[in-house]
Image (cartoon, rainbow, N blue to C red; front, side):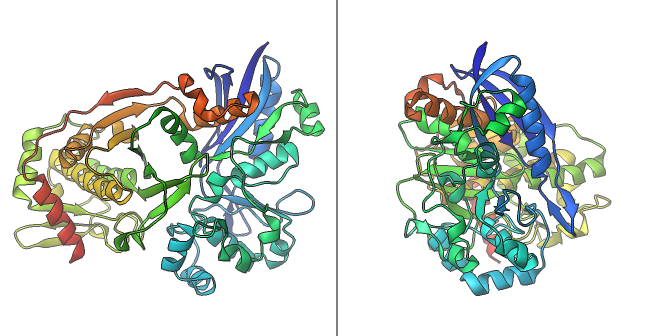
Length: 501
C-alpha cells in the first residue's frame, strides 16, 4: 500500500485534503466548500463540520493508502477557545463578522494605541476581526462566562491538531501573523495576552510547524482505520506554508508577491523595524517556518480590479480581457489626465485613509466610487471599456509597487509573482515598466499551501531539516520582459501626490 502524507488545507471557503507520496508527488485531492453559519447573531466557523468531513475523508482514504503523517495549514485569522471538555467554550467567530466601532475603540483604549501595538507586536490592524487579539477581545465582551472557562487558546491549525491528538500547542507562524499576541521586541507573549487574561491558556512558547506534537488518539484511529502511530505536526499558517518552497531553493534576496483578492508581498529579513510612513499602513511581519522575520504588506488588489471590472462590464456589456494595447498604455501614461485612486475598502491596503474615486483633468473632476458603483452611469475615465481596464491595471500596479517597496524591494531584488495576476498582462506590463531594475518572474507551485505543509510533514517523518528537501521542489520560472512606457515614473508620482491632497 502506498505511503502518504495527508494535508488538511483549510481555506476561507474551500477545505481540502491533499495526499502526497513520500517523494512529495501529489497523488490525490479532495475538496469541499464549508461556509461559516450564523449562531446567536454572529457568523461562526463550522469547526465541527470541518472535523467531521476530514475524519470521513481519512476513513475513505485509509482503504487505499497508508497514511503516515498528518499536517495542517489554515487561513490566517482564526482561533478557537477550548474548555476543559475539549470543545469550544465560546463560538469560534468568523473574522468577517462586522462589529461596531465601539469594539475597536475599547480594544485600543485597553491594549494600547494602534501605532504602539504595531511596533511592539509587528501587527497591522485589519478590520473587522482579522486580528486574533481583537476577535478574542470581542468574544470576551460578548461571552464573558464562556470565555472565563477557556482552558486552551488554540490557533486554527493547532485546534484541528488538538482534536486529532489531544495535545494543545501553538506554532510560530500563526503566532507571528498579525495576531497582536506576540511581542516581537521581547520574543514573548504580548501585553494583549496578559490584558485578555489568556497567558495560562497558551503554551510557554510556540514551536516550529515541523515539530511532531504526538500521534492520533485511539478514538481517531478506531474511527478512521488509520494507524495509531500516525504522527501529527504542529500545523502552519497558509501564506507561510506557501513561502517555504522559495525559502529553501533561493540563496539570493527575493520578494514573493502572492496575488488574488488579497495581494500579499513577503520579504524574508533578518530584523524587525518600521519606517515612519509604514506605521498605520497594512505593513507587518510574519514569522517563517523557522521563526525568522518576514516583512509583509497587503492590499486588496484583486478586489479593486474585480470591483471596476464589474462596473465596466455592466456599462459596456463586455466581460472579456482585451489584448494589451501598449499604444493605449503609453497615451494614458503620457497624458496623465485620468486616475483611479484606492481604496475600495476604506481602511485597508497601503492607503487606508483614502476614498476610492476617479480623478480627471483638466479640472480636476473628482467622482467617488459610491456615485457610480452600480454601473448605471460612470465618469468619463471609464466611458471606454479598454481604457477603463487599463486604468484599473495601472492603479493596482502602482499600489503593488508601494507595497513592495515597503517590504524592502530595491533595485536588483528578484520579484516572484504567483496567483491570479499572473494572467493579467496589462497589470504585468505596468508593473514591469515601474520596476525596470528588478528581475520579475511568474512562478507556479501546484497547491503551494498544501505542498509547503507536506514539506513540514516529510521533515518530521524523516527527522531532516526542511532545507534538505529542496530537490523535491519544482518551481517554474517565467521571466517577464520589462515594458517600455516613458513617463510612467511621472504618472506614479502624480498618483501619489493626488492621494496626499
